[in-house]
Structures are given as C-alpha cells and as structure tokens.
Length: 547
Image 1 (cartoon, rainbow, N blue to C red):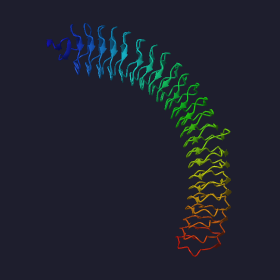
Image 2 (cartoon, one colour):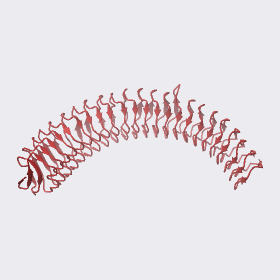
Image 3 (tube, helix red, strand yellow):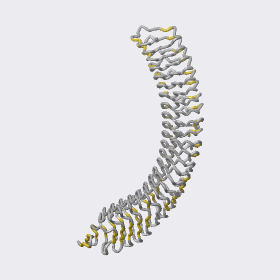
Image 4 (cartoon, rainbow, N blue to C red):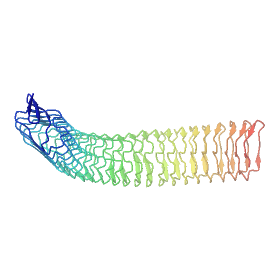
C-alpha cells in the first residue's frame, strides 16, 4: 500500500482520495481508478486522467457535485458503470483516442453536461450512458459503433440533432425517449432494427426517413411524436407494432409496403390528422384500437386479405364515410366503428365469411340509413347498432340466433323489422326507444322477450306473439302509447311488472289460463283498456296493476 499525498494506491490501483483540492491530476503509475475512489468529493472541480491510467472504475466519481470539466487521456480504455453518475454540474468531457468502451449509466444525471467529444476508437456503449443529461445539445457518434444500446440518450431534453453513423445495426429500446428537442435525425442503411419506445415523446421531429432494410420496429417506437408529419414504412418491415405511431397528431398520410402482415393494437391511435389509408393485400389483421380517434380519416380501403377487425379498431373516426368489409373477415370486434358519426355506407364483399358482430360495433353511427347483413352471421352483440338514429332499413341474417341486449336501442328512424326464424331470444331493450317502429314480425322460434325490449316504441300499433314464448320481461312494452292489439302467448306464466305501462291505446287483453301472477303496474294507465279477463289460476295481482 502506498500513500502519495492524499491518494491511497495499491499495486497501481488508486483506491481512495481523501484530499480537498479542486483540481485533480492522477499520479503517474496508476493504471486503474477503483470503485468509488473519488465518490462524493464535493471540492473537486476539474479532473485530468492521463499518463498510465487504463480503467476508470464503477462509481469512481459518483456524486462529485462541483465537478465541471473532465479530460480522459489516450491510455484509458474503459469508463466503468456509473463512473460519473450524478455529477450534476459536469459541463465538458474531452476523451482522447484510445477509449474502447463506456459502461452502463456512466454519465447518467449529469444534468449540465453540454459537450462531450467521443473518439473514433470507441467500439462499445453500455446502456443508459447519457440518461437524463438534460442540457446535452449535440453529440457526434462514430462508425466504430455497432449499436446504440437501450436508453442511451433517454431524457436528453436539449438534444437537437443526431447523425447515426453507418455501421449501426440496432437502435435500442428507449434510446432517444423524451428527447423533446430532437429535430433532425438521420438513420443509415445499416440499421435493421429499432427498439421499443426508441423515439417516444420526441415531440420536435417533423420528418424521418427510414431505410428499407429495417425488419423490426418495436412497440411505442414513435409514440407521441406530435409534430411528425412524414415517415416512410420500410419495405422489409413485417408488422406495424402496437402503439407504433400513437398520438402522432400531425401525421397526415402514410404508405405501407407489401411485406407488412398486421397493424398492431392502437398503432395509429390519436393520429388526428391522418386522412387516407390503403390496406395492402398482405395484411390479415387490424389490431385493437388501431385507428382509435383518427378524427380526420375519411378514406379507408380494406384489402380482401384482412381476416379480423379487432375491438375499437376505428373508434371515433368521425369523418369515415364508407367501409367495405372484406370477404375473409370472420368477426368485427366490440366498438369497432363506434362513434363514426359520418359513416353512411357499410357494405360486405360477396361470399362473405363473417360470423359475428361485436358489442357496440356501430354504436352512434347516426348517418347509416340502411344495412344488409350477410346471412352467415350468427351473433350480433349488445348495443351493436344502438343510437344509429337514421337507420331505417335492416336486413337481419337468416342464421341469427339471438337479438342481444340493446342491439337497436335508440334507432329512432327504424320503421320495420323482420326477425328471422331461428332467433330464440329478443334481449333487454333490444328495440327500446325505436320511436318510428311500426311493424315487427316475431317468428315462432322466439321463446323469450327481455326486459324493456320494445319500451317507448311509440308507433307500434299491433304485435303478434308466438305461443311458444314462456317469458316476457319487465316493461317489455313500456309506454308503447299507440299499441292497440297484442296477444299474450299461451305458455306464459307471469305478466311481469310494468309490462304494458302507459300503453294508453290498448283496448282489450286476453290473459292466458296458465298465468299465475300479474305484476306491479302491469297495465298502469292503460286508459282505453275496456276488456280484460282474470284467469282462475291467478294467485297475485301487484300494486297498481290496473291503476
């Protein structure tokens, strides 16, 4: 062990410094600055590391709060992990040729670092080297590097320009995340992969040109690049990842090449100015929320190759006017077109193989006037066409098994509905508030009508119910004020609460012999009702049943 002034040195390794000088020159003969050797030495302002030093160890200058300038000599080959972590006043670093590697987090949280010179000799970068160097404005990288590792420049809020050198093959996860001032970016032909969130929240970038050889771009890579207007999709890219361009609010158009097979979940979510999109023949899946709230999207051509439209795929695309569902689609997801206020025309390619329409799929599409559904559809989800206020004509599929809850709730322009044979249940509020509905054809296959199924259908005059129905839910014909005639099925056990509440035009009613209970307010305010029978088997009559 050797003690030179305030230095403790053992076999060429500088183990500890215990002095108070603001200016440090590493003594000759030192080959390594050990872990934490100068950690939290608050008096140090300047360091010159030259002579025989080959390695700067981990945390060597950790939290030297007043350190401003560092010179690293040509003999140094490695700067260790977190070597200058939290040197919050470090402004300038000059590194001579000779350095080979900089390890993980070496300059993390050097908040005032503005300038750093990196030599050609560097071959290896660790992760998050310059993480949160918030005042770093410009840096030059050399072609000796093969990748920009994960988190290299994350949080470098002042970084305005970066030229990625030829030779770089991969840009790592979050490599430039939160580089909010980054305006110019050059990506060379050597790059084949861009990692997750690589440029997330780079809010000043307006244009990016990507080389065609890129085969993978990770999720969130360009998330919330709010000023990005132009970007090309590389020809060799196989998929558009989840959230890839989400909230790129300035993006107007994008061209996708022939290799891409899928558009990921929320890939273009919140791209409010995106207006045209053409799906190429290789794409087979449109992910959940893929175009969520693309408010200016008015033109979308779907290739026949598409097999599925997932939940909320086009939710809130207010200007989308028409859509042709490709023949290979098996299902339209929940809320897929919900809130598409201008959607007027929904078509299906011939020989369609669609089997299901999800919950709220076309909820609030109040410009649709007519829709003809392919016969192969067996499931239409709840609220699928709720509040399609201009919908007048619906052709239901012959293979349909059920009309789900609130399927056509609030379709105030719907005048007629033919329910196909095979439907067994009409769900709760299925046709609630269909105020223009006059004609309803209910087939013998139906055995249940749900609660409020036809409530506030104020234009219905007559309904013929098949005898096989065993249950009619509470308030099923609530406030059908023009209803004059309806028969109750022979198989019915109960007349439920409020079943004909305020059916003020109802004139007569035959209650089947098998009915045992008449519910509360079942015939409340049926003011024109003059003829009704009460079977012998009725055990209870609810409060205000005939008030």
